[in-house]
Image (cartoon, rainbow, N blue to C red; front, side):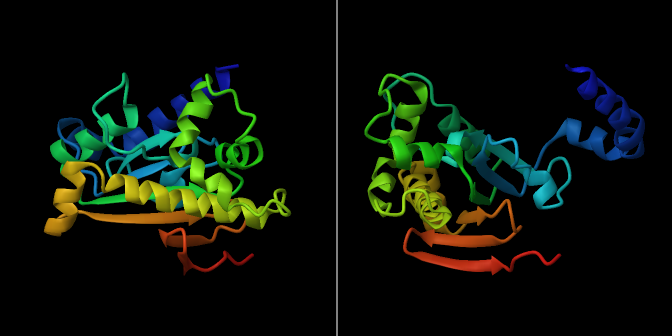
Length: 210
């Protein structure tokens, strides 16, 4: 099953790697990404492809439903929080973007099954970060794409607010050295919307034309 990946690796090694050897050698010495991108682990989301970026441009953090938990020092493992700390305090990346998308399985599961989810599951505990989003869904339109889209965008708003609970992020935002943005990508049309909070949404890139 992995033969296709190995074949792709060979094409990469003889193509892109060979053609960009000097640049990649420089990157091996130091990375200086310009954006932190918190996005979903959905296989249909490829940030480097969507934004036409090169290796070294993006510091990508992926998890289910592109969520940011609130700051806390209790508990066990905090992969997203650790990645944020490294990106902001060590690499000093000047911008964080929370990138959500349509047809998100995590948000859909939360909206449709919030009362039935096994609270001992990893997914249920993770999605509880944005549990209030389920209450925003119109109970009479639970299977409409518009309902899911709204909840996906609202979850981005929650994550933006959670980012500000991290002292090292809040300090830099207030000092003007760090900016936070929320974007929602439509995987069907290619449109991109900016999310200020769950009530303020503006289209920043129109739907792609055929």
